[in-house]
Image (cartoon, rainbow, N blue to C red; front, side, top):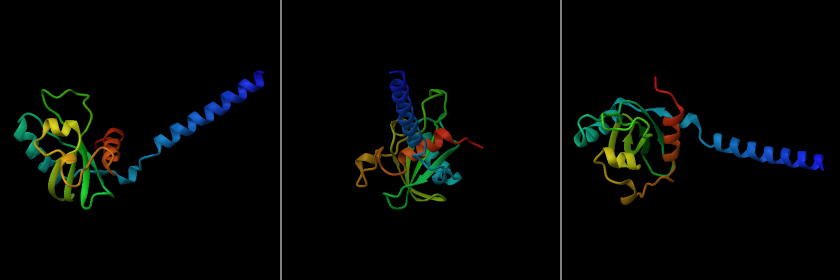
Length: 146
Protein backbone atom coordinates (compact mmCIF):
# COMPACT_ATOMS: atom_id res chain seq x y z
CA UNK A 1 0.00 0.00 0.00
CA UNK A 2 2.85 2.40 0.82
CA UNK A 3 4.49 1.60 -2.50
CA UNK A 4 1.25 2.34 -4.33
CA UNK A 5 0.91 5.72 -2.56
CA UNK A 6 4.53 6.55 -3.28
CA UNK A 7 3.99 5.62 -6.94
CA UNK A 8 0.91 7.83 -7.15
CA UNK A 9 2.78 10.73 -5.55
CA UNK A 10 5.62 10.35 -8.05
CA UNK A 11 3.18 10.30 -10.98
CA UNK A 12 1.40 13.38 -9.60
CA UNK A 13 4.73 15.15 -9.15
CA UNK A 14 5.76 14.35 -12.72
CA UNK A 15 2.49 15.73 -14.12
CA UNK A 16 2.80 18.85 -11.96
CA UNK A 17 6.37 19.50 -13.09
CA UNK A 18 5.43 18.90 -16.72
CA UNK A 19 2.58 21.40 -16.47
CA UNK A 20 4.86 24.02 -14.92
CA UNK A 21 7.54 23.45 -17.55
CA UNK A 22 5.07 23.87 -20.40
CA UNK A 23 3.76 27.15 -18.94
CA UNK A 24 7.24 28.51 -18.20
CA UNK A 25 8.45 27.78 -21.71
CA UNK A 26 5.39 28.94 -23.60
CA UNK A 27 6.91 32.34 -24.49
CA UNK A 28 10.18 32.89 -26.31
CA UNK A 29 12.46 35.67 -25.05
CA UNK A 30 13.96 35.84 -28.55
CA UNK A 31 10.72 37.60 -29.64
CA UNK A 32 11.24 40.39 -27.06
CA UNK A 33 12.79 43.65 -28.26
CA UNK A 34 13.39 46.84 -26.32
CA UNK A 35 11.04 49.64 -27.32
CA UNK A 36 12.50 52.28 -29.58
CA UNK A 37 12.70 55.97 -28.72
CA UNK A 38 10.18 56.57 -31.51
CA UNK A 39 7.68 54.14 -29.95
CA UNK A 40 8.14 55.78 -26.54
CA UNK A 41 7.66 59.26 -28.00
CA UNK A 42 4.56 58.27 -29.99
CA UNK A 43 2.85 56.63 -27.01
CA UNK A 44 3.92 59.40 -24.61
CA UNK A 45 2.30 61.98 -26.90
CA UNK A 46 -1.07 60.40 -26.16
CA UNK A 47 -0.41 59.75 -22.49
CA UNK A 48 0.66 63.34 -21.89
CA UNK A 49 -2.51 64.60 -23.57
CA UNK A 50 -4.59 62.72 -20.98
CA UNK A 51 -2.49 63.47 -17.88
CA UNK A 52 0.63 65.65 -18.21
CA UNK A 53 2.27 64.03 -15.17
CA UNK A 54 2.12 60.48 -16.58
CA UNK A 55 4.69 58.94 -18.92
CA UNK A 56 6.35 55.76 -20.17
CA UNK A 57 10.10 55.42 -20.50
CA UNK A 58 10.90 51.77 -21.21
CA UNK A 59 9.25 48.59 -22.36
CA UNK A 60 9.24 45.70 -24.79
CA UNK A 61 7.68 44.94 -28.15
CA UNK A 62 6.80 41.74 -29.95
CA UNK A 63 5.92 41.60 -33.64
CA UNK A 64 2.52 39.98 -34.16
CA UNK A 65 2.34 37.05 -36.56
CA UNK A 66 -1.43 37.57 -36.91
CA UNK A 67 -1.71 41.27 -37.73
CA UNK A 68 0.46 42.58 -40.57
CA UNK A 69 3.05 45.24 -39.71
CA UNK A 70 1.85 45.45 -36.11
CA UNK A 71 3.92 45.43 -32.96
CA UNK A 72 2.53 44.74 -29.50
CA UNK A 73 4.18 47.23 -27.14
CA UNK A 74 4.09 46.72 -23.36
CA UNK A 75 5.23 49.47 -21.01
CA UNK A 76 4.64 50.53 -17.42
CA UNK A 77 2.91 53.90 -17.04
CA UNK A 78 4.49 56.11 -14.37
CA UNK A 79 2.97 59.12 -12.65
CA UNK A 80 1.83 60.52 -9.30
CA UNK A 81 -1.67 59.02 -9.52
CA UNK A 82 -0.54 55.68 -11.00
CA UNK A 83 -0.34 52.73 -8.59
CA UNK A 84 3.19 51.30 -8.52
CA UNK A 85 2.15 47.72 -9.20
CA UNK A 86 -0.45 48.16 -11.95
CA UNK A 87 1.38 46.01 -14.47
CA UNK A 88 2.16 46.87 -18.06
CA UNK A 89 -0.15 48.72 -20.40
CA UNK A 90 -0.28 47.30 -23.90
CA UNK A 91 -0.69 49.04 -27.24
CA UNK A 92 -0.77 47.71 -30.80
CA UNK A 93 1.40 49.92 -32.99
CA UNK A 94 1.41 49.66 -36.78
CA UNK A 95 4.28 50.65 -39.04
CA UNK A 96 7.86 49.89 -38.09
CA UNK A 97 9.57 50.12 -34.68
CA UNK A 98 11.47 53.25 -35.78
CA UNK A 99 8.50 54.71 -37.65
CA UNK A 100 5.32 54.05 -35.64
CA UNK A 101 1.98 54.48 -37.36
CA UNK A 102 -1.48 54.03 -35.87
CA UNK A 103 -1.64 53.27 -32.14
CA UNK A 104 -4.44 51.26 -30.55
CA UNK A 105 -5.05 50.47 -26.88
CA UNK A 106 -5.19 46.73 -26.20
CA UNK A 107 -5.23 46.55 -22.39
CA UNK A 108 -7.36 48.28 -19.79
CA UNK A 109 -4.34 50.23 -18.56
CA UNK A 110 -3.65 51.50 -22.08
CA UNK A 111 -7.28 52.62 -22.40
CA UNK A 112 -7.18 54.25 -18.98
CA UNK A 113 -3.95 56.22 -19.44
CA UNK A 114 -4.01 57.10 -23.15
CA UNK A 115 -6.49 58.40 -25.73
CA UNK A 116 -5.80 55.69 -28.29
CA UNK A 117 -8.86 53.75 -29.56
CA UNK A 118 -9.82 50.32 -28.24
CA UNK A 119 -8.09 47.75 -30.47
CA UNK A 120 -10.94 45.28 -30.09
CA UNK A 121 -13.36 47.76 -31.71
CA UNK A 122 -11.49 48.23 -35.01
CA UNK A 123 -11.42 46.05 -38.12
CA UNK A 124 -8.40 44.01 -36.99
CA UNK A 125 -10.16 43.12 -33.69
CA UNK A 126 -6.95 42.87 -31.66
CA UNK A 127 -7.66 41.26 -28.28
CA UNK A 128 -5.73 39.64 -25.46
CA UNK A 129 -5.53 36.42 -27.49
CA UNK A 130 -3.98 37.99 -30.60
CA UNK A 131 -0.45 36.76 -31.22
CA UNK A 132 2.12 38.98 -29.55
CA UNK A 133 -0.15 40.45 -26.87
CA UNK A 134 0.53 38.01 -24.03
CA UNK A 135 4.13 37.62 -25.20
CA UNK A 136 4.78 41.38 -24.93
CA UNK A 137 3.25 41.45 -21.45
CA UNK A 138 5.43 38.49 -20.48
CA UNK A 139 8.50 40.29 -21.84
CA UNK A 140 7.68 43.40 -19.77
CA UNK A 141 7.19 41.31 -16.64
CA UNK A 142 10.18 38.97 -17.06
CA UNK A 143 12.87 41.03 -18.76
CA UNK A 144 14.74 43.74 -16.91
CA UNK A 145 15.14 47.33 -18.03
CA UNK A 146 18.70 48.52 -18.74
